[in-house]
Amino acid sequence: MALRSPLSCVAKRATATAQSTQLLSTHASQWRRGNATVAPVKQNGAGSKGPTAMVFMNMGGPSTTDEVHGFLSMLFADKDLIPLGPLQNYIGPYIARRRTPKIQKQYAEIGGGSPIRKWSEYQAAEMCKILDRTSPETAPHKPYVAFRYANPLTEDTYKQLIADGFGGGKGGRAVAFTQYPQYSCSTTGSSLNELWKWRQRLEGKRAADGEVDAEGAIKWSVIDRWPAHTGLVEAFAQLIEKKLLEYPPERRDNVVLLFSAHSLPMTVVNRGDPYPSEVAATVYAVMSRLGHKLKYRLVWQSQVGPQPWLGAQTSDTVKEYMKKGQTDMLLIPIAFTSDHIETLYELDKEVIGEDAEGHEGVKRVDSLNDHPVFIEALADIAKAHLASGKAVSKQMTLRCPKCTSERCLASKDFFAGQQKHLDAAA
Image (cartoon, rainbow, N blue to C red):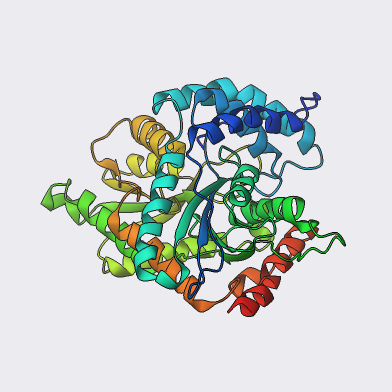
């Protein structure tokens, strides 16, 4: 998010975080009315392992400026994403309320809302079309989107799955497909914890004896990371090569590539979160594809609050290089799979427009959005996962060295435990 200004310490008691859920719930009914209901599916068709629900997980973003407060309230309440200490239930709502007018103005400047839902729904639908052709044994594939802090919320998506014939005593298969290519406990981990929570609430105690693995519940598996997939790397490389052509030939070889990813608090990094190393793996894979012909740096954006975050910050890097006479820089949003406020406002308007003062040598690579190579990559990742018969990756079962979250442990154990159900259905 474009939340660069520091946050002061707060002693004032603020509105309870439960209000954020209420705010978004008012829009959830509009979402359900505004989207066509997928026709009920028939489970266990003859000679088929389908249908399969493909659930794209992401942070999400407010579709309108009216949704900004609810979005911020849920975001600052999430201790996995932004740890604010023991007073988070008071500080989080206060920050959300204070920042809402400013963030509403930012969303107004990029069209009145985030395009992330539009792109997520498009990417999921197009991927499923490819999967229907390339993985007919698990077809039909039904696209869903589950956002952590915006509509469609994970809760509503899970209820829609049940309404469409998945789970609720009817069985069926679903894949939780993270749209964060690089794993972090703050992003993918938080989304999986939320999915696990609603699974337990909506299906966990459905049986009379309270059995968690009740017969007829959805069989889940997880695609939790894909930082160096060849299709992802190729898509980024093609977009970089295309943008480099906008520089005069005599300047092209001296352009500095700045791979920009969302930062993390150092408390999360020092806990052992794998995100920094996985982002670095993506960057190195892309540079290898480009033949290491250009200079580059990995930088970090979207720091929130006064506590130490992973750096160097993208904004500071651009300003310092400008002072040193390096005015040809190409920004690459390496940890994002579509446009949203971090690209359209923070990079385009704040970093390029303000920090670089609109210098023509500072540009941004287009986001992945509807890039056909990227869509094919999503389908390839999903097909390989479905063919593997694995519930989770080996890496997902490994907790951070200093993790003390019982919720994280329970979530990981649940998804890993789905293996026995997948094996039984094979």
